[in-house]
Length: 546
Image (cartoon, rainbow, N blue to C red; front, side, top):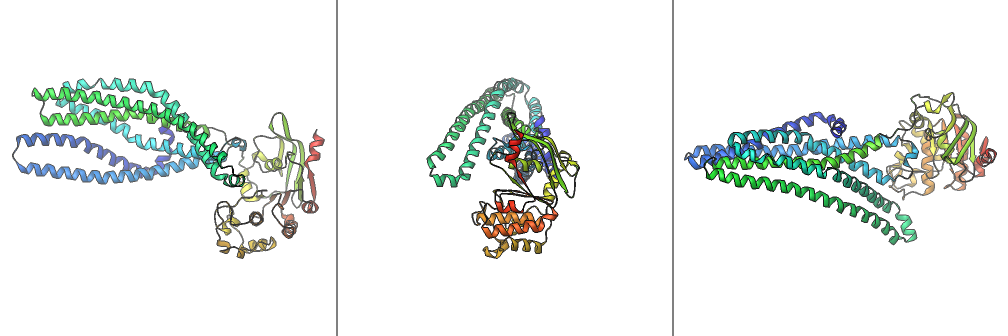
């Protein structure tokens, strides 16, 4: 079964816990089979015997079995949670890591809340399915075989009467199999969309408050809920119908047991204790049959989750080579072209060489491809461009750009992000090592004094960065990138949240450190144009290209 093969990789990482779990499960199952047999014989002994010693002995055995089952149940539940959580998180992280390395344009029109909820939910479903059924398939099958054998030895006639229940089970599963899959798939999609809308509802709190669009915001999630609720009711009806078919199977079996079993006792073909044993065993058999009946539904649910996980994992990763370089002297673009669709090229026949030691200022109106150019230089659009991009003599598609971006590239975006952590950790995020004196020097040049924050470098930046200003957030990101001492430094509109004095300080820092790197600035600010060794006007390039 493909779901088990897929998920087993993650569960087997915890094989010692799994082995203990399996052992306890089989011992508990064996005792569960033995217990009704013991009880039935005990009833027959009570009817015929007058020796109190046997009563004491059997009572002690029953108490011992009960205590073991309590301890075993506790251990099994604990181990199940431990294995399940660890395996689910491992799978979840693997899918997320694969997702992060997929081409950037995969995420166009994708909602992050939807994807996150989908991956988390589906990972949980397939791991739970494996742990719930890995042992139960075997143990329930063995239970049916063993208990039928014991029942045959007690009363052949009674046992043969109940065999027709099996074809009834198979027929019911065959009828419900495909409809359950389709409705469960639809429900999962609608649930993911609904929770993504709920997530957006909180993310857009500032927009909603500013515009007082409380009614409109509620209407969006209300409509999404209606769609999800309709799918839920449709799925619930079918699921309940399937469950009731299981109850009908149990009803048929119990009716046969009481009618024919009672007749056998009255005729003297079976003792009361033997009837009790057969009744208990057939209840257990029907429980196992019920498990297989419900297994069909749980399998269809797990199959939906498996298919959705595989949809993501089967998507190709973005192009990223394996060659590592340790310095960048120049970056050369030759006849580079890029378009978001086939009808219009954002960049076409673009040629440019960026050299270490120089500052480049990229200007151009909206839509001329400034951000696109940067993403091409960073290898973000490796899957989509035509032409050639070289780091020194190395084609960018052959380079390990993950390694290069992590170690030798610094990027400060127009809307910089901070992490919900200490101020010092925001300065050093992603850096394996750093010089504290160098950090102090950079902060001094950027006019950012950690002492002004409540707890200095230990100050926690909140999730939405509400406890720092826009200028401070920009300076934190600038400081981190200068501290990295990158071979390539990209600054996107670096003056957008800075005062005049801070802009002057940043200019001085750029000029002082430019010889050690390639510096590319996206800005229309004349302060930065004036310090550039070369200005690249994408408006002119666009006109010349036309």
